[in-house]
Length: 96
Image 1 (cartoon, rainbow, N blue to C red):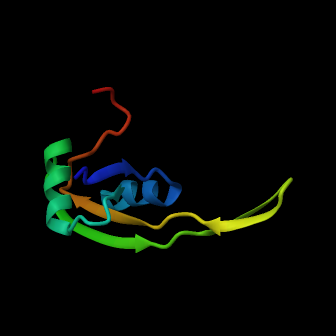
Image 2: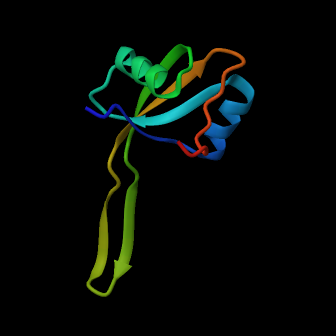
């Protein structure tokens, strides 16, 4: 099971990173906090202090096409907000 899918790089997540040393990730919906903590520590080599999770509901989407009005939903996903030790950082933009 690939626990960490991708980082969430939004303005709100960037504010959390700058002010509170927290990072947001999309994670597998079956993963628990202990598994998420272990995966982040192994992947980035940082000390995780806390893990907060939330299941984000999918948004309603609609568009008008040649065939008519099409409506549906974006899929839901699990979000994890990771608090790491002061002085440590995670660099998403470095080439590994």
